[in-house]
Image (cartoon, rainbow, N blue to C red; front, side, top):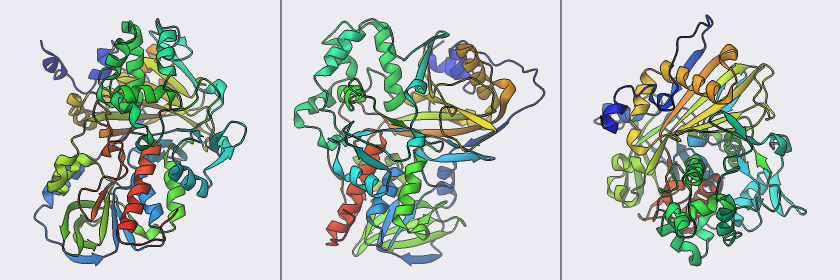
Length: 510
């Protein structure tokens, strides 16, 4: 039977089954609740209202499409101006959003940041400093986080499970590790953020795969490649032979990890923390409109016209001078057809499962990597080492990264999540030797069909702001940037400034 034939047997519980974990009937009488969230309905809504005419018209100076980090960063540059931001989801955040169950908050996507070297780009540093998120530490020479209560203690940072055995970290004890580190050492201090600042001397690394780069310099063992691939999937959505050498090298040497302790910042609401800071900084709460799906964008003689499906499921015509498009670029084929071919990205599908449990489970490390044979399960994060608001519950957030061809499996999980949840619980219990079922109260599932662009060879653009139409500026990590907070934030800042500069508005945030 071929691979596709096998996949079709049971796409719901398939991922854990491939790891040798099979759903079993639970004797526990008390059942947990499950909620599932995805944006798959957006396509249905577009089709349903495709023939509806606008019922009203609005005018503003600027429009931002997309309420993730890039969109909000663009909004910080338009503070005090007449603008609107449209987000199709029911909340701001995109892949950095958070959710709640009772009094417990948890991240449903990106969930941490690391302190920044002083060599990183000044625009993001300046914004985060103004928002009182970071401050410079003269001793460490790093920009560190003001809210120190959300910094994870080094002793609680991580552990890794490989075939049921706990080790310190993913690469611990693997053959070839010393040589691997020596190869990467020549690039220390050269892999900057944002990536547009990386010197031309290193751009050749964007043209070859990380595996090919390493194989030319060392005898890359199968186990080292597998462990590296796990880490590449965790940050970049692709394996060692799929991502570029620049992306791979950047992962390991963009910060001085082997020279000093680099503080890791992980609030209970994840990177939604930064979104809240940006929203407060703009002081334009009425400008942010959720449940608002942009149906079309077109240039006209005096600016741009957008058709927006609002929260009442009516179509509005919005006229503006300029647009910052910070939404996912794969949607351009529906929204802005003339520009769709500008971004031919590959996206990694992700699943995030938040297990809300009564206190009493002993996962005392923040990051709990689980290296399995097929590398689709990315382990889980424990809220126990975090400064949390809940006195009753801990949250263990598990992640899966799928291959692009397996995106349709998300549909099956959305329709029937229980077998997949049960199988994931058993996977965690088997790999860690710790029971969570008896404490489990609720499971929140977030399905993201296009969670992050995969930085394959040739993907990185190294450009400031892609603006292929005179009144439409693009922002977001899927404009040829690494899928990182810093890249998204810088992209939004650059786009916001570009909009104002093009209109000769010289009082943007600086």
